[in-house]
Amino acid sequence: MTELAPFALPLRVYIEDTDAGGIVYYVNYLKFMERARTEFMRTLGYDKPAFLAGDRLLVVHSANTRYLRAARLDDGLQVTAQVSRLARSYVVFRQCVYRGDELLCEAEIKVACVRQHDMRPMPLPEDVHAALAAKT
Image (cartoon, rainbow, N blue to C red):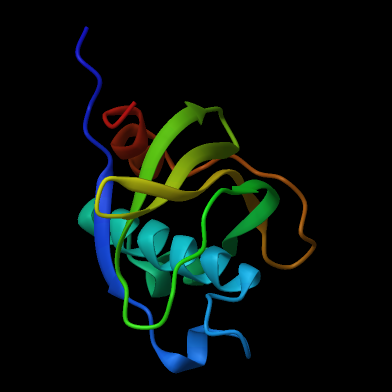
């Protein structure tokens, strides 16, 4: 079986992303990954306003991140998002940040589906689950 290529979002490092030393502040890698996950879900037809109207939220449950190299001001980056595990009420994404072929940061992000009114776990909608399953 052939592994599917991950979704990739091109980004540029701006001054607002860097610390006083001119390198990307560590927490901003998580922002970059959030953007990539959001755009990946958009390609699957995920409509955030409609999802929210259904009393559901997708929330980050956990993030296991490794920082390997620093990105710097004006670097062009590729931020990937790929489904690595899928369960009834959550999905785990493997995400990477690259500068060219150089891996700068990698993470495993678990995103859970919860009820908006009490934050209790609930199943992913069938259409969202099916779209994610097609990408595993």
